[in-house]
Length: 112
Length: 77
Image (cartoon, rainbow over all chains, first blue to last red; front, side, top):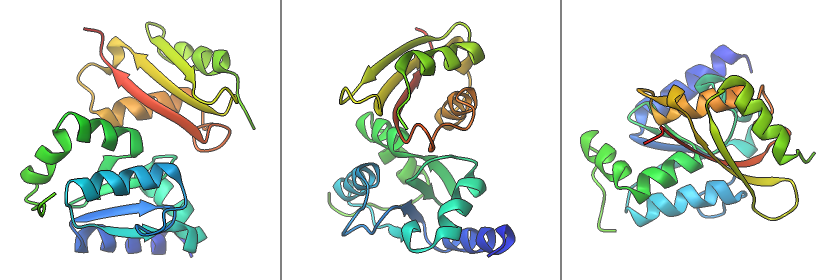
């Protein structure tokens, strides 16, 4: 798949779903500790999100890195905007910034 | 392919000369690092931009030779 095709697929995903996590493995079965950590953070906040397994699609695995211009996975998008990777998400969760960002973006969290 | 902690520190300092870099070898295997980078160059930048500056300093090794570098950035207080 060309970059164009991968990029338009990514664009569609992050526009259609408020919270998207590009990750290794699935939310139920993360295949990497960093991906698992972000799943945990989102679950603790009670945030509904779509996990997209890049391991099932090599063009997506490389394409998302170029799309975001970010070399690692996982990658969290909220309302079409890149929030960060595992370290940033964890830091933002710890100091309350993530909760605030989700509220500001109008993403309602369920009961945590 | 493990990478030496000093090498990581040197690369970051080349790009961000004022940076205070603290690197911890999380498992003692030369492969899982946690780095704290404090630099005035981060002032006014978002966290994503700050991390990108460090990735740039590492010249494409992030996600490659360095697959497990946990990163924290800050502006000097």
